[in-house]
Length: 460
Image 1: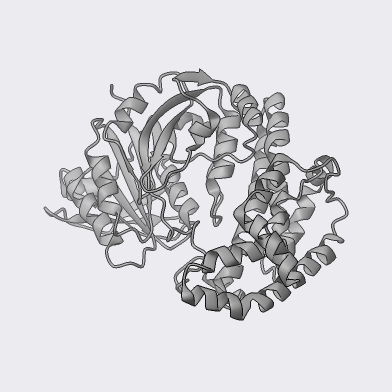
Image 2 (image 1 turned 90 degrees about the vertical axis):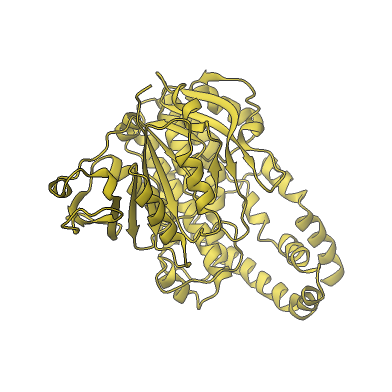
């Protein structure tokens, strides 16, 4: 098999896990790889150095060092590099053994790439440095740098890619007991499905959020044809990417083997409740806008995530020539996604004017009456229970509950008033009167909601 697989690995502050990740790439049984490492402005001590070390010893690797722009920007650099969109100009003038050859980006450089590194092993003579040859790839696959692959992952995927646009494999959690997305979909045998079959299964199981980025392999010609990239500066970019990708393909290969090892980290960007923002971060300006309150910033990020996901997904649906699929994608995913955009109404500050962008979604708000399920998580019952469950395990936490409960209740009540006042300006947003949906019933079964409802009776 002579197909070339392009591997894209975003890197940000993963010094504890990066070697295990890269070893799983180097030691793949399938060797015809081209690997791009994208250092997204790491600030820890060793992530960048480890990336340089592996780039030096393996000529299949290339390393891009760029300004911090978020996970999406790093993956988009990979797509654009393999598409030949960058002009590389050598900074290094003499080819020397045991050295990294350095390149600049000439011309268009939207992600502010500082330097590109390639091993000396990739060049035969000094004259070759001025004539950089871009690799041509057949398939592309993404790998998060705190995770790793089974050693036969690429080989088993590549042999199944003939005639299909997308392959979807399963994964296993390294340190968490939780059902995977494929297990939720109950795909237990290898098969090729259509987008219509995928959407029907989605509706059958009531799974109205879908994500896909690192869970498989994509035909690169197909990806270039549909021209889909990741939405920059949001934190759940795989929702838009996955829904758009699956809705525009002709076929999807289901490969229900666990070839990817997913490490659940409390310290990852998407899981942190409190985190520090350094001056080099793409989020720093927003961090200052929110008075260095990371909790408020995270909520605003989530608002931005769902609003931009809706806006970009609608663009894809308009482009999709298969009207039946577009309609079904709308009906399946947009009600839930639109529902989640409403969390912006609980936030007073709006430096990016996200609320104004809801006007662009007016036609879709009028089309779908919302459940209000996501708003339940901002009600006093849910927030109060969540606050207690997050703090009751330690003496310090118990003291925090006693000292801050009253203030927190007042803040939640103010947020509820803000929501009610703000939503009046958007008469096209209507809630369903047909009773609770499945998502609302699920949320009301959460411990946070049930405990908070009980505490609310006692305290208020």
